[in-house]
Image (cartoon, rainbow, N blue to C red):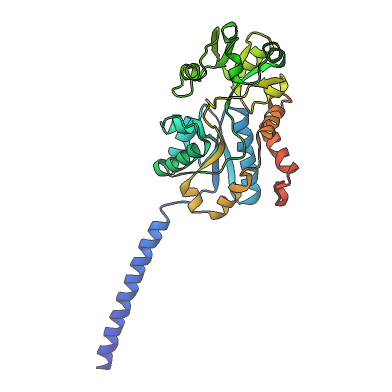
Length: 313
């Protein structure tokens, strides 16, 4: 009788063991569907700015964690960088711009209010692509009309609106990708400001600054953080009608990476709000005018502000 009872107890314990093993196996299977990478891949666009920010992230990650970092460099546009994340060809996008992501990647109407634009981009990137967009680094790389100091004085120019009385006499060199943009391109600009230039020449963004400095164009449309603004002593005209949408710059990371490594989440937050417009112009200037490598510019910034010693100021 005792032996029979022991057999029943043994059978019961065996059943419990099998059940526990099965549950454990299911749990293990779920957890192993994601494999924590040993190497993180950072996507950067071809701009100097994007490469500098990418190398800052690389230096911080390799200093603060055990990850190695591979750079996925010179991707042609913001949408190409997003494709790299979606196709699992990259893990982090070094530079994401609010206005570009809103109208380009997400196909939404342009939004002029910075807070609303940021909220929409953050929400939709997470919903549609499981991507987490971090707070801004602290600068916005917007389109900006610029003139030489001589032309600013000659035509008494401080704001974009000041161009209206003289625009029919002036030629403008602009980023070729801006001309036909919906919402914030040339046609919409002309409607909002109520004037057109004598002629507009679309060209590669890198050439517009040379065109202004050489007197070939009286007005150019460039980027507000470009280091060549300082190199050529150009004057940015204030967008007094707030025509251009906000282009606050942030990093974007795949959600799966952050969910499985909270420490990395903290490391990536170290650059939140730490780089203002003047600082980004200076960093771009060091690379574009003084011809320092973007990796060198990034490393020097982090050293100067004591990031490798645990500080950030």
